[in-house]
Length: 430
Image 1 (spheres, rainbow, N blue to C red):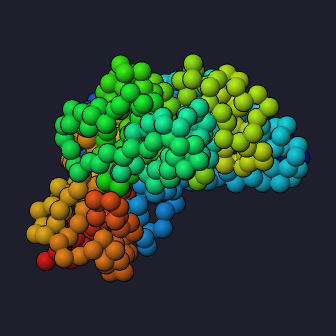
Image 2: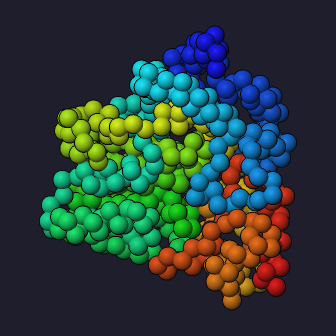
Image 3: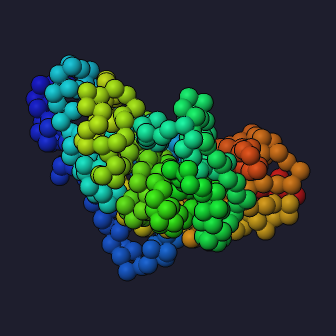
């Protein structure tokens, strides 16, 4: 990068404030095209817009996915749009021209505008939002940072994410807390059944309830707001794992009613791989110890949770372009499209003999993720057959009482790809 182009780059990004300036890569590459495509469906409901293939073909072209591989494991990690990749590359190139200067004195100044952008998306106060690397880091910060004593009880489920389960088990080993796990047989299409199960596990020693907003194994959407209201009525705090819901479902984090929320931004938001967010209700920040050291561990400043030392500033700043891309589509329109894609393939697949769905198709209880199985095939066998015979990438799930293959489309997934999946399932189940 020449001196003149470097100066232009710095000016255009407003001292590296991410993608929040009027000359972001997103605006340069996609704003006009998306505006034109959006105007063509402006009179449609979100549900009808979800089925407009002309519009979604514009979104699909913004990704650089391998055409020889049908990636239906976006529940693990989602690819980033090209503009997000380009932003990371540009920031990385700049950082390497003088790392200690451009990282610490220039790029680091972009965290506050980024925090404001993330907070706006989350419907939260910027001073409640910390930027980190993934859901595990965000949620473990709270799990290890809470002042729980021997005998204090935490309620979770056997269907929660393993990294969270193991964090509570370690606290039980180290500190003597009591970690209780209830179990669900999904799908469940009754919020009260779920809320009652948590409620019945409560004792006078219960201090915390852990809830997964969207269960990663099969995509069950949990009634977090109802669970939070029930828990708070009993003076119990709630921590929410939002790894699979944020950037997918159109909601505001405070409306969930929980006290703590962690998410990965490299899933449905399509931010750079290795980016995450922690939200803590403002009056709870002071009592949570940071996961890594800080000179003021009892500070009320959310930034105490960002004392990570050297990190990837290019990845962090690339989040801004992902948010711009997300907002360019529209959160509700995006949610409805991905739900439509899930229902499109799943409603056809379940008509095949020996096929079982492990996820509700009711919009209140699922969105993107759906589990499927074929009688007579293990999840590993079905996963391998889909890949080896059809180059369809999914993931086999065998966890507690769940045994299926998880299928997760994204906005770049085409109807043709899903038709191939449906054909494969019908053939394999014949």
